[in-house]
Length: 142
Image (cartoon, rainbow, N blue to C red):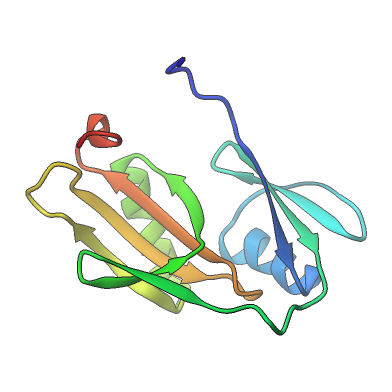
């Protein structure tokens, strides 16, 4: 497979388009792109994130898997950032009083795959993870 990365497109459901729009645009500071009365595009670190209105599903359950002693929400999505950008982004989130599910910390410290990570939910219940590898070549290393 090619190692040249192309921007990905990810569409996620939100049960309140206006609240989610404000969160992604103003809190996370993602640039808004095209939109309609049912969806909004955002520049998600060079990728295309689209929030789509979907009526709330009361059957939705929260699942977790244990990773490095922490309860990781499943499903979740996010971006692998460069180390310094992750540090800057995580500080911004802390200054904005984001309620973390998993506070920013270093996972697998001193091991292959050492990474900075953090988790939080958007206002519509979508779990997000942002991480950065100390050594970027460890991304898929066993």
